[in-house]
Image (tube, rainbow, N blue to C red; front, side, top):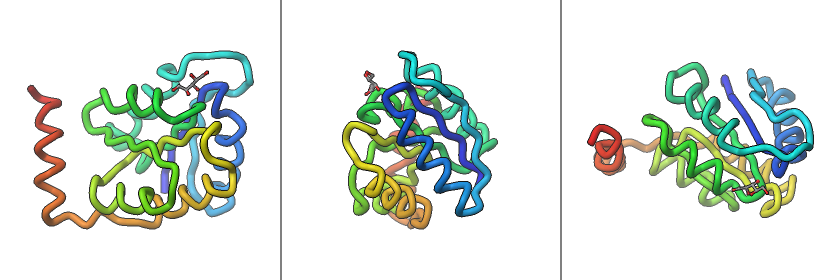
Amino acid sequence: MRIVTGSDHGGLTLKAALVARLRAQGHDVEDVGTHDASSCDYPDFAIPVGNAVASGAADFGLLVCGTGQGMAMTANRIPGVRAAVVADTFTARATRQHNDANVLCLGERVVGPGLAGDILDAFLAATFEGGRHTGRIAKFTALEKA
Ligand code: RB5
């Protein structure tokens, strides 16, 4: 899969571990930054990642900051993005199956690298179930056009 990723300084170390994991699994990964530990602003990375997913240039986005929250708040303002903050494997699967989430947001200060890897694997392995969930998503994506 084509996966675009980004982090701020608070997510840099976890992002690096997950990029290595994804590349070892054979995924095509683009990292938009940040690339060093100096303090920076999470929207500067959430926006290009969200745009890549919304445009179809990437299949999924992976955003990491201290909590995942700022990344998700930013990315979800881009029409077509459905970003989910996830801290457990059940939610990782369910947000793909039910919400068709296309951007995974993780908090390096919340989840350890082992659990984060399991969350990422579960997210990518799950598929959207469609059916009753399609209309529910349409109800909130309609807000993007209002
Ligand atoms: C940076 O200190 C921190 O605020 C950021 O990584 C993130 O947690 C914001 O949501």
